[in-house]
Amino acid sequence: MQQQISIITLGVNDMAVSRGFYVEGFGWSPVFENDEIIFYQMNGFVLGTFHKPALEQDMGRKRLSAPGAFSLAHNVPAREDVDIVMGQLIQAGGRLIRKADAPPHGGFRGYVADPDDHAWEIAWNPAWTIDERGLITFGV
Image (tube, rainbow, N blue to C red; front, side, top):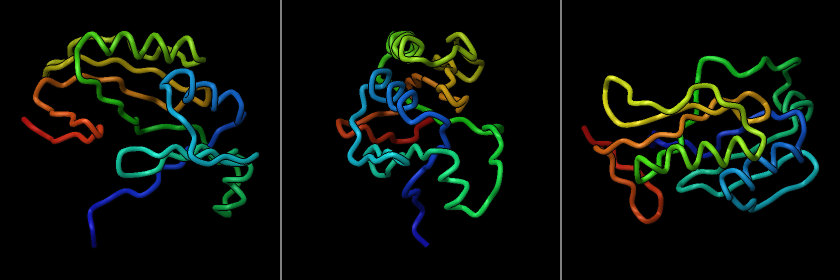
């Protein structure tokens, strides 16, 4: 089986508020949207924000729980970009989880929650290369 992720879908409570966070905060443009879902073309996969009741129905599950033991990451090309992106996300409705600092393993990172409490790590890692398409090459 090919090692890939095709779509990551996040359940959201308010489509307009969520759209504002991703469009104004990250500056991303939807490639498709309706009343229940918005898709953003990423670098090699699609990120979807799905109105939570519609996602629950689509999955056949009731009362999807709040986000928990995972985070999404957005890596940036320069250390100073971490604070800039975090500031943009907070202005667009995000909530600071952890102020940016240097972890013991190196680099620089901080965490912001989107309006539905999905955690986003905004990080710079000097050992990782980000190409012009936004693809990261893992390096140590």
